[in-house]
Amino acid sequence: MDRLRLMETFVRVVETGNFSAVAREEQSTQSAISKQVQALEAQLGARLLVRSTRSHSLTEAGRLYYERCRQVLDTLEEARAEVHRAEHDVAGMLRVAAPVAFGRLHIVPRLAGFYARYPKIKIDLQLDDNFVDLVAGGIDVAFRVGELKDSRLIARRIGTAHRATLASPSYLAAHGEPRHPDELRRHQCLMYTGLANFNEWVFQDEAGGAHHVRVNGNFQSNSSEAIRQAAVEGLGISYSTSWIYGSDIRAGRVKPILTCFRLPPLPLNVVFQPARRPSLKITNFVTFFTDAFGRDPDISPMLSSEGDALPAPGR
Image (cartoon, rainbow, N blue to C red; front, side):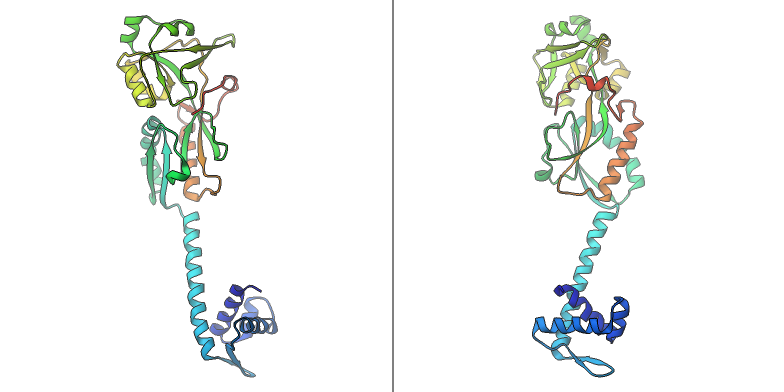
């Protein structure tokens, strides 16, 4: 029998004062409990108890060993309780990574509702349009927009980012509005380099035909916020997730174009480290935002069958 189990039995014998009480606790026999203490004494090479017909008493070695055993068992119980709290209490620090615009528009505005439900969770939100290594960054959960390339991560699909082609009224007044994707080759196109094949824009016509257009332009960036501002300033045409431009569309700062053509949507996932079982605080965080996204017209929970028909560039 392992040393820890024998230590636990010995401590209970000392604290209850007799073997029979421990036997009842363990649903065992007095003889079996006595043999466990004898096995511990044999392992230690020292006598721990002086036995008589009706009682027992600790030897000097037994007293010292009991005190040490009690310390060890108390430390183990404290560690167990700490692990249980970390895994099951909805409290503590949660490190979250997300693209900049997504965090600004879809995470931060919902945090008040999240804190109303989970006031003991602390959020450390890391916003970066570049790839974030979860292990190196100590990230608990990350939002990823686009097809996932790192198969080592555990992913959960929580929504869809729809896309649109947009331009400002000033740009369209100066350069004309394209009516077909092929006409984009003659325009200034604002390219977001955070996507694979960032200079190849894909469209689908009403008949289901795909149009792959190799675009060009004098401005590109790895920041979706910079691309948005460039479009608002009239520098060119943007091919982007539509939710970045929600307020701009409503205010008339940009307008959707080529609306007769569909753009491949991008999957929205949350990812975890593969060696980690999500704690309760991670599970509740993900569930809260999944439910919130399900009620958001800009983010639908799942791709339609039509949306799956076109390949989406990854990020």
